Length: 82
Image 1 (cartoon, rainbow, N blue to C red):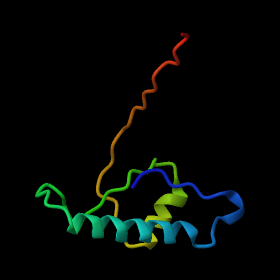
Image 2 (image 1 turned 135 degrees about the vertical axis):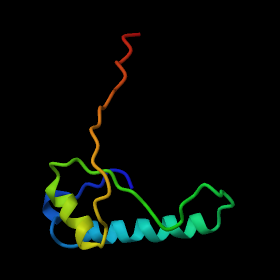
Image 3 (image 1 turned 60 degrees about the vertical axis):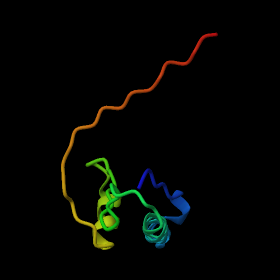
């Protein structure tokens, strides 16, 4: 699951939980139809910045558990001057 952002006016109303649950259902449904033997149909991973306490709380309340810690480096391409 990638980035999830809730507008400040709609936070703490359960919308993010609905989106995560919906995404999980959709991913599981689509993976069951796949012939790809490399797909883990039961386990999903969401990467969260360690300082994002709101997201960590959300996923914990939804039954997810922390399984790893990692340092990440982001790269972006330079805008072309042409």
